[in-house]
Image (cartoon, rainbow, N blue to C red):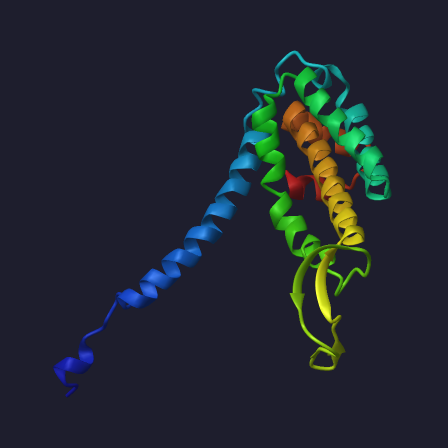
Length: 209
């Protein structure tokens, strides 16, 4: 016979575990929810794609090829002024396509911290990007080391690192803006038909759909 106390099962976790898991899930679930909400608005809700705007009036195949070319061109560009101009043009195209600017900015910049933040922050510092000091963060003293790695005596944010970070963020923002404009201004069925017309294998189109 099994004692009665051994037959009892504690189904609920303890309060401390519930509190800890709840906080972690809250952040993760919010991030995932925001991303899925964006895709739902872009791909399921075609209200913006049906408006009479500039990009809506273009052939979906022309838009698709143009956006792909723009994304590749931006990815290869290192001129921060040119990137700023192209990013500004995406805002102009959004306005001319009857897309609310605040709505558009929120949909674009929700991705920037996720995809750019982890890469952007380290390159600000002279530990990774040597250069002219912009802001001093810490004075580590002579010959500092982190395990086998030598560190600079003074940790600073450099001008060169800041420019690299700004360039990277602008590049990501411009590419994401172009992709968002394509999704917002093109009905889903026409977008996937355009992919097929460009000889994208049917299995890939069906998988994305």
